[in-house]
Image 1: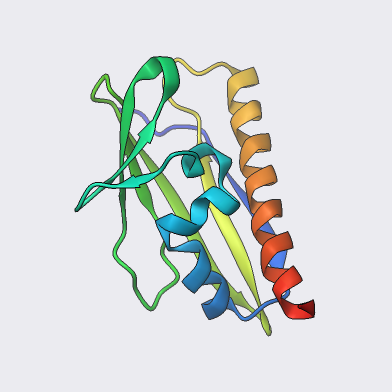
Image 2 (image 1 turned 90 degrees about the vertical axis):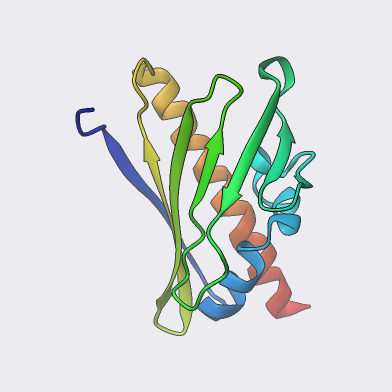
Length: 137
């Protein structure tokens, strides 16, 4: 397979990176900020299930919790295609940087790639709002 086009989408969060990671790495919190995975995410043991609507049931496997800010996940479509999503929470000064690598999959149009990128920007913005609101609460 050739190297795929990819771009990093990121946002700075004024909250300790470990607190951001502790929140973001828990699949049960994703319904609050990650609209692509959050809706209907159900624990199925070593993976999670999400209703993909007309696509069918989608399996999601997450990296185990770790001390490195890695929140990678693998999305297995009903077709058997597995999409790898690299996602990191890293220290940025006294805060955090949330970084998600959006990859243009084979057959994906430029418009679809841009739409996915905007979707990730929205989700990271949601994560930022939730985490920074916690500061003032």
